[in-house]
Length: 209
Image 1: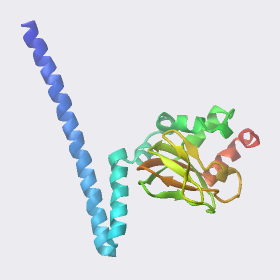
Image 2: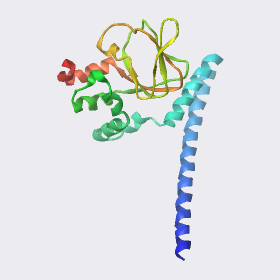
Image 3: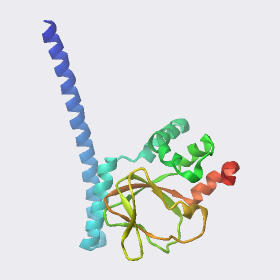
Image 4: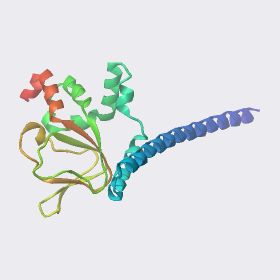
């Protein structure tokens, strides 16, 4: 009787888990289909050329594989401020803390900065920016790889998951010094110069550092 009861409970648990997983997949598939229907309608209405259609589809498909069509910011916006902060800290705090130029700044500085990060998708072959561009953002690699290219197109350095680049754009007015190219589908987080300035205005000690 004990074995029978134990088996029944285990079966119920496994069945419930599988059922929940299938429901989650179905909801994600529905979001994906709706997104692609909207994009296909846009292509038809705007007469987008096939080559550009392919690039847009690749971008959307990778973005969906990462996020499952869930917008973290829109969900967080419906929560109290302290819970919004906890979500951002849980997802991205380690990214910001590793930047050497921010070392020694206060915890509140990091807490404010982490809420300013914006997601950015680059599919394999896309350029994040080019040498000579005016820099307004720095980037963190959350997923994927990107490389630094010299003027001849040779790889100088590879940025892997957890790395960051472009931080000098936040501190100087000098143009970009090299091309950065995504070598795989990448999920990046960007931090804009205006957002950093807004945080530094609140924490002058961090500005001095």
